[in-house]
Image 1 (cartoon, protein in one colour):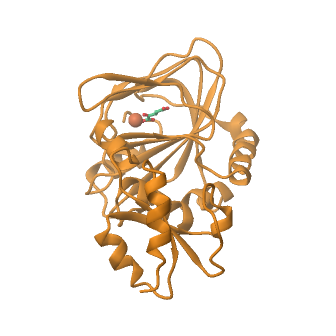
Image 2 (cartoon, rainbow, N blue to C red):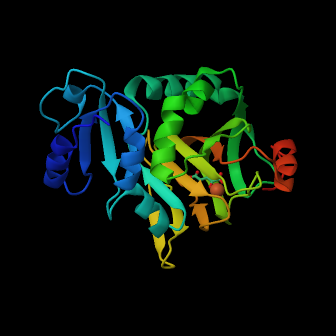
Length: 265
Ligand SMILES: O=C(O)CCC(=O)C(=O)O
Ligand SMILES: [Fe+2]
């Protein structure tokens, strides 16, 4: 195993919150060691492009993020299965999503018999570029690290664009579990000019309130936290909803929900 752990540990101790370990490896045996050190994951990126990293290693470099008290996984637990992440997509990808949404928004239809009131929506075809962005290996790997779910894959359930307008709201609910294991619903905010907040009840029974900013991702585990979207009085909000799962074996809810773009969820 050829990983320059010394350099990594030195950097990690300077930065107690993220504990970044830098190094390079000739083979995958580094994974075993990383696991022993409670390392959450890797991203291969040139050292020079990583903020705070000094020096160059000149080879494939590896950045390992070690688990710390304040990691995303702990935030997920304290949020009772809800995790809010800012600046989720890279600039280019984010712009593609904004453009796609703008090009189809006028086709969105009002959802009926849904817990969401006065919300408009439409499904995104699997061949659309924005589906490939959210299903890309790179992005799924990031989510696996964030959620500590090594088996996470994109669901075979269409992405949905949803638009909140004045009068739109979504009552308190838990998300349906579309597969036979708990899933994660991802709510990606495309734009938000509204006064509406997404709220959820955390592990301590306390109310959390979040105005979701553009390019943020809210991950909600199925059948976990109660959550809702407060009624919009002013402005509009556009989101993309999609599902990640650890199994593609469908639950009974799948058929009901997929047939029911216009039925109660
Ligand atoms: O719009 C949001 O922030 C959440 C939407 C939601 O919970 C849902 O559609 O199930
Ligand atoms: Fe929900």
